[in-house]
Length: 432
Image 1 (cartoon, rainbow, N blue to C red):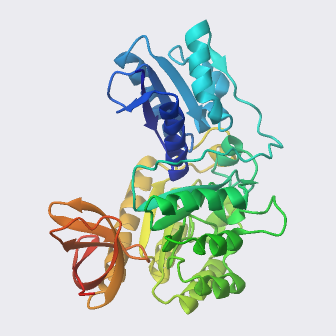
Image 2 (image 1 turned 180 degrees about the vertical axis):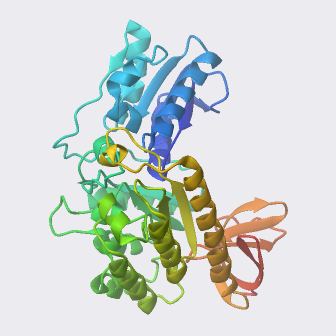
Image 3 (image 1 turned 90 degrees about the horizontal axis):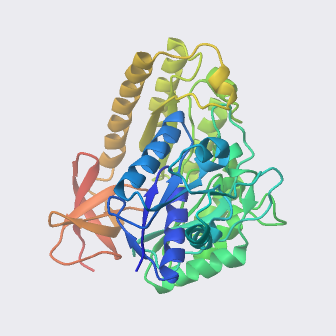
């Protein structure tokens, strides 16, 4: 039995696509092994969000070949899509696939084995309209499943390469989303995460359908008790959405709303489509309907031209909003984006200092948000066992652990919160 190993870089969408490709190989009789094992085929699912992502992709390609000089090396994904000629020059690479046609991967490997000729099937994504179905039947976890409902992005933020790597918006057919969700529910999943490159844009290329329709239809599926949304643009949220959202009692009270900067002048240079006042109003609207909602976000520090004053605006805005969790990224120039050519590139030491300040603030805000739940009863979906404790998440995305003698994985149980420890809550399961 031939062995296949995967290296996956980047986002949850990449991970979803990797699992789908693993299934394709398994169905054809291949065995999936760990990435550090000797294998016959190595698939590197690349990332190109930053130049560092490109470099890591190349490192993984070369590392794989060292494990087995006779192996077939497949480079697939965003880096391959954006720079196919660059990837083709890497001697170790045998097959190059972009962000489409991944369903051909097994056939291409078998074709290469017969002919021993380098294969490059990367295609131009301009005007590409088809959503590529990559169904997953046997998901390894049995608690939370990611369902990819959308691909592509039309936003063209000045720092981002993704619209070039993923192409224009393509939405998955609703019937295919429902079919996959029903299969997941039958295998024991309680929570699904609706994900995509720009998930809030779902349906813009279809007629009379949007993300809200998906949420409502998925909520009708027996066995699914939670629906979580992946990162989304804040401007999607309006009063109509919130009115409908609270009616869907399975929708998690957690919104990851990309902010990127709390300075209006920086947001304008980033080509983001909102102001801080609009963002503030959206958060207030969410909390009006869901007072306990967890609001998480991403922040980029050290964007070209970011002054000390602009950073302080971001710092103060983050503090004012009171996020439950923030992810801080130091700006990294990405070749091919407008921001990489902007004047006023920030020195690395300044980026590090700003990053550390924001991370420290984020940790403080997270503890404040978590602390509010001490003494409350919350429902927890348990996901894993660690050192004699069962751990899981609340609907508003707080990690909780309890002392348990039995395996609670996949169960949603009421927990009385008694204390706070680091970035999670400590509780005790309530008697049912």
